[in-house]
Amino acid sequence: MGLSRGSSQQTPAVAPPTTLFLFGAHGDLVKRLLMPALYNLFRDGLVDDNLHIVGVDHNAISDADFAKKLEDFIRQEAAGKVAEGGKEPLDAELWRRLASRISYVQGDFLDDSTYADIASKIESTGTSNAVFYLATAPRFFSEVAQRLGSSGLLVESEEAFRRVVIEKPFGSDLPSAVALNACLLKVMSEKQIYRIDHYLGKETVQNILVSRFSNGLFESFWNNHYIDHVQITAAETVGVETRGSFYEHTGALRDMVPNHLFQLLAMVAMEPPAAFGADAVRGEKAKVVGAIRPWSEQEALANSVRGQYAENSKDGKVVPGYRQENKVEPDSTTETFVALKVMVDNWRWVGVPFYLRTGKRMGVRSTEIAISFKPAPYAQFRDTEVDRLKPNFLRIQIQPNEGMWFDLFAKRPGPTLDMEDIELGFAYKDFFEMQPSTGYETLIYDCLTGDQTLFQRADNIENGWRAVQPFLDAWQKNPQVEFYKAGEDGPAAADDLLARDGREWRDIDV
Ligand code: BG6
Image 1 (tube, rainbow, N blue to C red):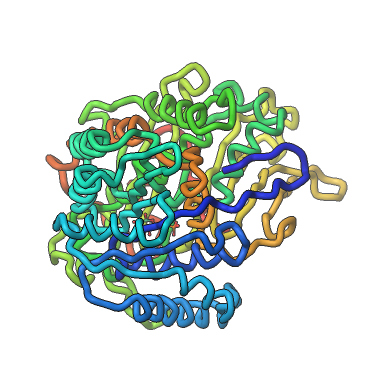
Image 2: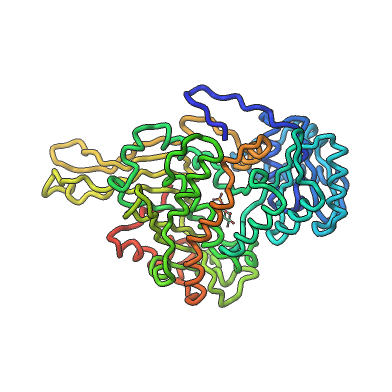
């Protein structure tokens, strides 16, 4: 992550020479995110001609055709985004240089000969540092890791590192996550494993640490004396799109909570690390996620709401419900929305509820952390509207309107004491020129340079699953869902969850 002090900017070093193997080379992740991110790193001079990119997959394709396929896809994507004003077109000369570093190994992930071919490829690039990026279906994670291990490809030396990148999902419950970690750790050390949660590649998520720990002001009120509760929302407007069969077995809880939402919770709730190194930061994050109270099944039911979007019509157009989506059972009880209350049992947060909600096909796309402060201790302004003030919130907008805002009150000018909501804030776009980025740039760069700060450690993953396991168990016995209309902000029961505690969700806006 490379944090520097002061306003001066660090000049990041060029990543060391590496042979980067992309398993699942024909998949969406490689086309949509990894190659564009590698291109952006190349454009910014953070990787150079010493990076060799090798696709690995079962289809037969020549090196040149593979590079051309990626180019066509990225051009097409960029063209669409340029039209929307979001991305720069591909620079032909830059791409030509990058494309000359792209090659391909055809092979079955389960066949030992594939790994012999990978070893030969490393010989031929002459670059023995290697990263194996598993952009594959999760069922291959253990299989590929074992074969990388048994073929000797994970043996490091003074001159050469060997690293493995794994995408979520890291298991589908606590036992499978423990088993996956055990399997990985049989053939490599924790130092070689880079578990990606793409939320940690977002600038605003990283900024939470910088804001909290470089501005002394925050620490003075960042505790249960001043904070009433915390709301974490990840609202999406898209439905399940083409991922019906994946989503049927996953649902909103597994898809978003133990990973993305708990990462946001950890950033807000962790103790200051002793240093900004990987061990210290990840240690504090694991501790705070480990402090989430494990509910009994009954408590889990009482403290959760499962929702599913139902058909709705908008502007004369019918938006299908989840049960009408492709590859979804017509009587599916998979949740597309979840709202939870969790408690963090430690000195700083005891008594402060963390309310989490995430859903598909909601009204507005917004990922936000809203920290609600306790009211002023004494109502100075009796018999005025000041008496009935709403709570102050600190809102950290992760996306799309990246920045931070304090919701405060000010007196409206005039002879009467009328209050007005005002915002004190900082929008990223007003202060910084943001380069087009996928969010994967930082993560790939950090992996190439050996910085694990933004990657998930085994204990963090397992602590996350330990906290959600009671919900999974309780819902298995009580699989009913509450419906909400596509385009609405979740079912009414989600409001009741907070109303029972005398609180309400902040409106989802940006
Ligand atoms: C992914 C989930 O991990 O995160 C998707 O599998 C979800 O279902 C996505 O849409 C959300 O990511 P972002 O960056 O758009 O908030």
